[in-house]
Amino acid sequence: MDMAASWRDRALAVMPIGSSTNSKAPTLVPDEPEVIVRGSGCRVWDDRGREFIDYRCALGPITLGYADDRVDAAIRAQLADGILFGHPHPLETTTAELFCDIVPGAEAARFLKTGGEALAALIRIARAHTGRDRIVQIGYNGWLNSLASGGRVLPGSTSSTVQGVPGALSALHHAVEWDDRAALDGLFAARGSEIALILVAADYPSIPEAGDFYRYLRELADAHGALLGYDEMVTGFRVALGGMAEFTGVLPDLSVFGKGIANGMPLSVYCGRRDVLSVLDRGEVVVSSTYGGETLSLAAATATMTALRDEDVLSRLRASGRRLQEGVNAEFAAAGVGIRLVGHPTCPQFVADDDAVLQAFMRLAFRHGISLYRVAYVNAAHAEADIDLTVERLRAALEDLAGETA
Image (cartoon, rainbow, N blue to C red; front, side, top):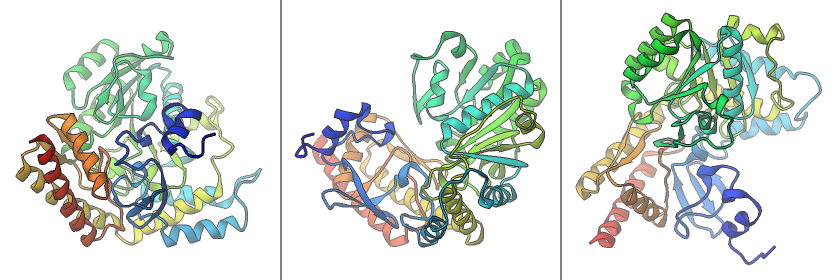
């Protein structure tokens, strides 16, 4: 191994894409960090000692802030007693109790580690409960969307090809665009008796107005005997404590949560109606993981959910996100660059008339010490001064952009 090579080159030599997470692989080097070595509050540092005000928040999981004292203390306390055992630890039950108390419609819950496997569990449960095979997928459901031709492979990006998936399986998965009611009506008119589950992840720019579409999906599923499932990996514990179920007032039959639940520790949840999940009790469906009850993540989740519930953290996230949106959008409008930051203030998305201009802007944002992603995540450690400094630095980035394109 060439120790003098860049981290990016070393990573590419030993792993495809250069990261285990596609969206984390840097594409705007040298301005973008090749690696991050430390985080505190709302800031991160790379291996070159450069400091960034961070709006990636680990792609969403960091809700309280990096190295949060409450979460770290809970992890350290549990570490002294052990990480994993051959029987359930009490935290497995108490964390599920806390979760079900917070999340509307969660009558029962179980734990896994990642969103992809939780979504796979949801699909299997829905098929077993309904005796049907077809799945409708709306929005970005992580890499599981690659089962459906035309599914989203990233927020705002779709793929028309399905590689590595047998055609017979892919044919059972139907990708539908956000709020495309004509397509949904047609699909259910033709295949309604075969559809087990509508699985919907909120379209980030459309979250503020999502309630009407969710009510339509609830009525559509009920009319055809299908189940309604929410992908709350981003929206849960961020848009509202109870995710889109709380935000819209429309209850699903099944849901998956993750990311913001444990402030960065790996944990996902699949949950929902007890009668639907009873296929697991009866042994009709087996979903099992050695690491589902790993205690450090459960301790972190308990500390995180308790703080989110008792300290009204989400109101601070909304205020910070709104301040960021308003400040940045004013700068975009003044610069006339055709970029906007739209959607719910806790997870708004950058949209642009020209994606190349957006990429150039993000490169310059890194150069000015601001770490951005297509979705801008705030955490509870972003103070007003951090937001104002961010807007100031992004104004400078836009000035540089104007100079480059002049």
